[in-house]
Image (tube, rainbow, N blue to C red; front, side, top):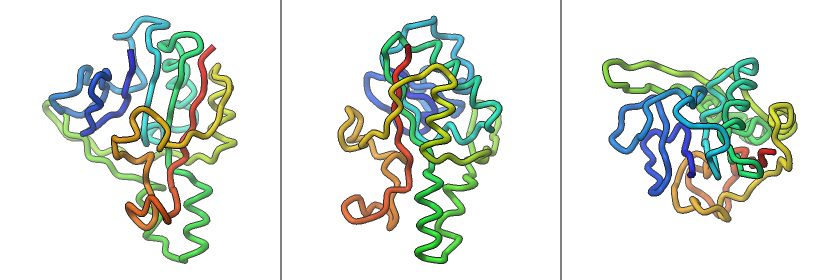
Length: 183
């Protein structure tokens, strides 16, 4: 089983989609921090793109431990978050604050069955910080991954965020893409 957590509008065929939003392809309309609908050690892969930053640094530990619980031993967690280091570099290169405000603070309206909520980013990550949190939560072999070399590379999402927008050949990647193994 492959889980796509925080999938939003993106429908990965053959994956189990989990999100608060109300789209027809979502199998479980739920927050990604509560996966009680899945038993322990059942997922081969969990993928979440630009979702983890909506939890603060205290909440994220329980989120990662919940994801770890659902993964089989040796399975892969793949996460993408805005890359704070890349955003700082972009700001220093351009001096344009408006280029980094979206990835830093986010603002995501979520239409649910009967309501709409607005979510904002609650934290930022660089590689060392994210690696430390993943290891604390029970993950090993934490490395950056190349979005072009994963099975879902054809799905354009925020793991492929570049400046200038969509310049995937010569632009600056603004997403921190990390994978780790459960144990």
